[in-house]
Image (tube, rainbow, N blue to C red; front, side, top):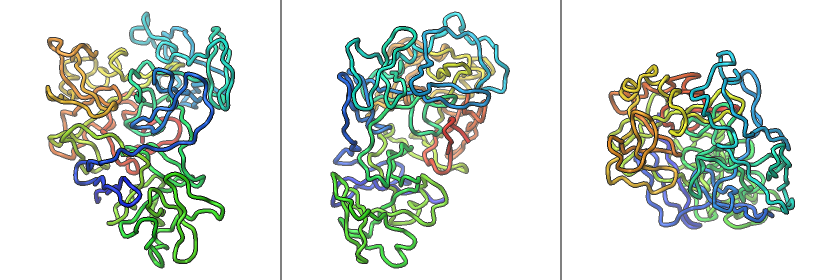
Length: 461
């Protein structure tokens, strides 16, 4: 397959190309940020722009706010209905059989000290004198807490988020490198400032612009600022995205006049199109055509220095500076509160069972950690360098004797697979339960339209 090329629009006149296939994103003189529609918010709530999810609502400390919409799983459902929180400070000791082929009643690892739902997902509490405002309402919980709700859904923060802009607790990107499985949590966000015909979707390479029906949006190198040069047969293959009769220019959006007199949307000065030959929603296929590019309201954060991509039999994956495929581990407990079990602060029995049959030494050989150089630094909050005790799988203070200096993404360690021999190998992908989705390892996929498309129930393929 051909590498996909992606244009990150940078200014009204011209864009800086993030060339996908050259192995790195081009440095941009201007950092792009997605705009959003302002709305009334309670005191103590703010909007924070995040690297992976665009703008999200956050508490006064900048911690992302999440909701937990009910999901129908294999043998039941988990999550909140409108106005009805189900996350409480109730200890869990056994599985329930919702997301597993195994029967309910199995004892959880560390059952006597297992965290409760509210320890991992503290309810976003409202002050005693707080009043509803706009789409924000207040729920009186059975445990006596007054909890904020947005559009009726109870709200929470995540114990995995420590810095403003972190979204380690969940994603709108229902694919393989985002925390999900089971009944995933989602960030709560204001509406992006886009025309009603379009939306922005979290993807591996940034916040991708699409039509409301899911078709990818493209721009052409042959166009000029606010002028389309795609007519005739070109417009048949690349239908222009037409603006309604009464649409007006706003912010980074302009309405331009085409040669045939029709009105067309332009974003950051670039006329917009769909691709008639696309075979799926959220597609990068149009970017395989020279001179055409997907559009992003904001690009994904930069990878570690020297890292790149590899074209594999299953799609495009991230690689380290030596060309080795990078993997991540995902896990979601088969419990009523479906807590994530892929972070180092959770019992490691789940991971050890998948990578080493419970044997730590074997696990370290099969899926070794991605080691970071001593001087390695991250340019984003999504990527981080951490020290980990390889025998316990727990993060430790920097410089702790016997620890490893490793790369992490969304707060979770990254791995190699021992069976990969050359660049482009993905022998460790889908290693584990449900193809590595519910409890296991997956390659760090980049091209969403080839791998990891999901329905709303979780991650996988």
